[in-house]
Structure formats: structure tokens, C-alpha cells
Length: 344
Image (tube, rainbow, N blue to C red):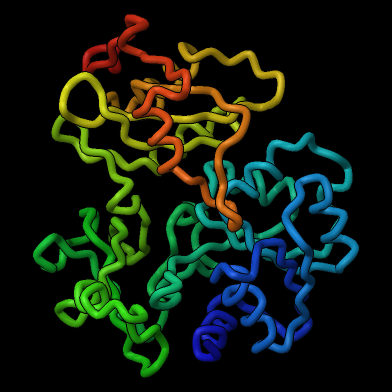
């Protein structure tokens, strides 16, 4: 734990005079390791609050003299969709960690006067990659480069390493003794499966670009296979959330009429929004590959979240497949998206 925190402190530039604001539950690795314990090891101060609150967030930041904070899941979307105020830059925050990085990251930095960074890591292994303050702006949507001491590869199903630009499973190997978890407690078979061929298999899909920057694509279990195409739920979510009327979105597979998956999406809109399913579909057609456009859509008042702010997609998928939620069906509405229609 101390080794992890020390690595984190160096990778995330934590200084002794920093004040880390923590609003996530301490049973989660992000709050416990990435924020709290990392700050302790660096000699920094930790400001704890009982839970995240959009209305209290910036006032607590100012009250505590916060210089940095972590944002997971929907938190950044809730902050971004609040009306701009003259106090948006009235704070001491200089760094903000985000995962995932939203499409409007540069606008977020300009509005709130903070520098955003991100990385890639797992609570059952280690921090494997992170961005740097001097990275080019076009690399903002990457997870950065592998940190020193980490062998990071993109492999296929046979653990053969793939070239730059090709998507496969992210596999890791640390060269530092005792810097990672030793396995899963009382789960020897799961430990062996994850660590086969001297690599830790993350269960995540991603790719390395020509410059060595890592890009996360999706969890393997969240990838949607539709008519021969592998669809990243995260890529579809990013397009949905780039619409100015959308606050948050979750994309997941839904069984359609044929024995294969279709793309389903639950979308949280801004209060008072008049956006229609048809308008959102047209926006998606203009901004993503035709085969990725959601067939099933629903507008929701809230998305089910874990205590750490992650969307519980399995609940949305169960509701959709049991037809317990009012899904709008694009094809039933007479809107067929094809390669030809997308080009029109």
C-alpha cells in the first residue's frame, strides 16, 4: 500500500503543501489509495467530506483551501452542467484528476482554471500509466504513457502483442517487487487466469498510438457485438455526452428481435430540456459510425450509481431486457440507419 501510494505521489505530482479534497467513500481504492493515502505519504493535507454534493462542492473546495481533487464517473458532468458563475475560478485548485476524461475537457480547464490529468490503473494491480503536465493538448483523451517500471502491452486472445493502433486487451507486468497485489484472496483459479503467461490480464480493451500513449476503449465485458462489429460503449457514451443537452449517459447491450445484441442507451438530460429521441438520433448519426447509433433509447430522471459514482449498467440492462423501462425503438419509429443514410 505504501509502495502504491509513493508511486502515485510521484506520478501525480503531489507536494507536501497540497490539500487533497476527498468526497468519495473510503472503501473505494480511488478515495483510499489515489487520494487519501497518497497524500499522507507525500506529507500533504487531506480534506474529507461525508459525501459528494454538487451544490456544496465549490464552497467546500474554497473553505478547505483545496489545491487538487479527483473526479470519478458522473461528478465532472454534474459540475460542468451547472450554470457558469463569477466564482468559477475563485479557488486554489491547480490540478484535477478525471476518469474518464469528458469531450469538453479543454473547456472545463478554461472555465474553472484547473489543469486536468488522468491515468490508467487497477485496484487489483497498480497505477500503470498517467498523463504528464507537458503532454500535447491532442493527447488529453489518452491515459498517458506507461510509467517507469511497467511493461504495458496490447495483446490478442492468444497473448500475441499487437502493433500500434490495433485494439486488444491491456496486459501489464511490473518490474518492481511488491508494488502490486499478489493475487485474489482465496481465489487461486482467478489469480492464475489473470496472471497467465507472466502478464496481468486487465479485462480492459485499449490500444497504443504511434507515440506510445495508451487509449482505453472499453471493458471487455461492456463491449457490444452487433452484426459483426465490436462497439465500444464508452465511445458511444462520449458522443452522447458531447450533446449540449445531455448531462450523462450509459450505453449497454440489449437483446433485439434477432438473436444478437443491439445498442441501448439511457440518457440524463439537462433540467427542462426539450430534446427529442429523433433529434438525439440525428446528432449521433452525424458524429459516429452508422453501426454504433443506438437502436434503443430512454430519457431518465436519474441513473443508478454506486457509492463511488459509477453507473450500474447491469441494472439498466436488466430493466431494458425485462421491458420494465419505456425504451424508444428507433427502427419501430421508422428510422433506419445504414452506411448509405449516414453518408447522405
